[in-house]
Image (cartoon, rainbow, N blue to C red):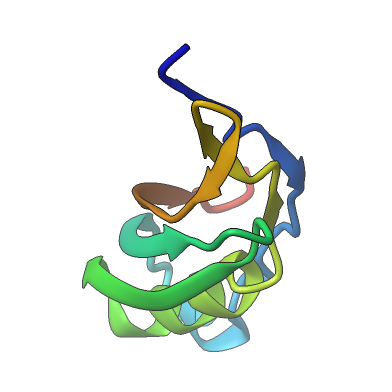
Length: 90
């Protein structure tokens, strides 16, 4: 059977930081974390990204919920990489 699951069930969009908007900062933030056996992210770490954007991305992603990963039908933890993009409004 192998590994199954991992679908994103709940995604919270980050709030664009006011200071980043005022400074016209945009870009991507990359985070690493572990999807736990209950589908919640654990040990979320910022890998790359502007610090202002990274804080907002982490606060949003921390609330995401995944369908738990399963190996041969049993829940497992699995590392995942997440990229959050911030684009200035036109």
